[in-house]
Length: 372
Image (cartoon, rainbow, N blue to C red; front, side):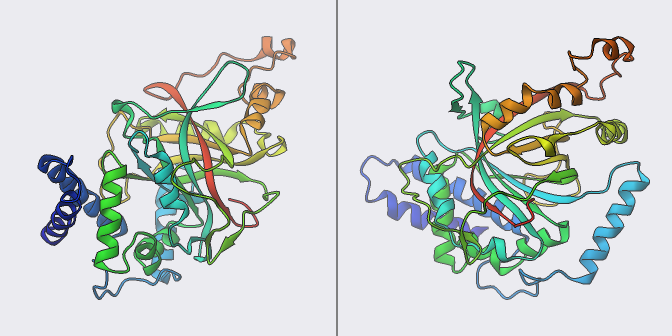
């Protein structure tokens, strides 16, 4: 930590010396943030400093013991009355400074990564938070977020893995370091300093068990080269085009109500896969056992579950929301008055406060042929 802080101070002061408007106080604030970002990156990866010798797993292999541990955890879940995970979802939440959004997206688009070539990888996109305009235009407005909402971030990286052990192998291997500028101390520090100038604070990783997963094979697969997107114009001035629309609903479910909440969702009828423009669905259960900076303990103000539905675009989402499939799954089919009269009273809610919807545009989509 001392080494990282010293290097950060040296690099930032050198940068500040070329800017007459940059005060010493600003330099020190950026240095503190760089140190925090560095700590987050190292804790999130569970790795050593760049070029330091390590005996960790390679980025493309998963040990037998890791898979066995996955199976043991799955057994523990079922013994508690919880559903087994179908996938493992890793997210990282970013509070991007106003006016820096295009630069942030360009850094993601132009980074070096071989994500799509790794064992167990299924799907990735970068999400920017939006507000839905109700003026009939179908246009989404970027939501920069308020201070109290920064925990959820105005940008979120979203990656689906086949197993938790696949994710663990990636974050402790060389592929993670390459994607985060860890090929050398200089590259690593450059990445950290650039992050400090774009972000309001360190990223906040959050991990989830993906439950009740549904998906359809994609109609088209974005072109990749060596595991990352190609042919994208990312100049740091213009935002990347939206490639999907993501609708989430945040649920605040106490631990003791988890089994009943999951059963209620497992028992409901779903016709999502029949809807035009549907890509994938998953009920995401927060993994409270995950280790790393910003992941534990989880406060009561963060959702324990989050339904996440990926659509090709907002029009597809609106079509589902206004159609019979939505009414049937939510028990509000107004075309069947007789069934409605016979329907028993709605069960008591299992959450501590009402669900809270949140919406995103997704870009930089990378997917396997079989879908998420």
